Length: 98
Image (cartoon, rainbow, N blue to C red; front, side, top):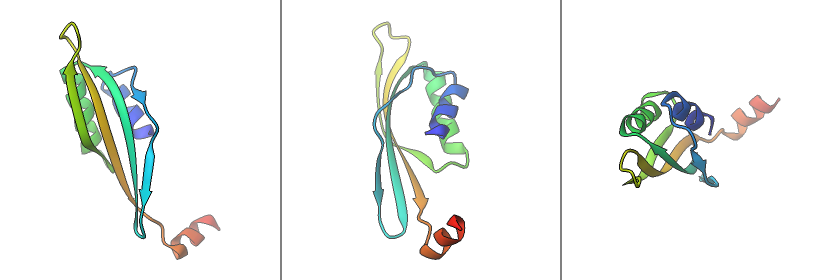
């Protein structure tokens, strides 16, 4: 969430709407999903998406829906983001907690 907030602010996008995040896990990985809605210029949106993908974060775009706003000066975007993290093993998790 911090990565998304900092990258959207750095791209000049304000008023990002966050819906509830979901998480899936298996034996080795944690996969976290976040849906966001925003209104931005095309340049702001491209900058935001580029910054998300170019940094060291594991956040990537899974799904993207775009529509022009009524004045056709901005884009309304619904974006489903996903981040994958390796699960800490029992030994590593015990080492970090102690």
